[in-house]
Image 1: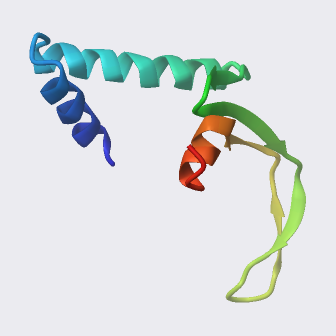
Image 2: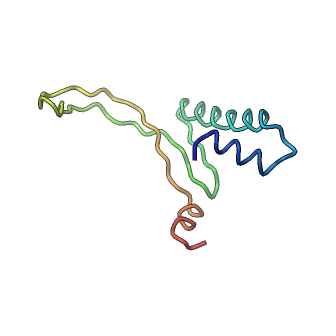
Length: 94
């Protein structure tokens, strides 16, 4: 599902809300999650999962085309861990 499909689904299920308002709500939620993660905070949505940031240390990598050694800088990457309820639903236990 992409963002526009999510907005449309929420708008269809809530006819009392204008689509532009639903779009603003969805965008605000994603912006808040992004801002929190940019600050290094963890965002937990109970039953769904938790978003966090993991640090990858600097290392020496290889250019796959030439085999030449390449220095890879330290970086921060997003990480998502599923919640128990989501895992159970995916595995048919709920």
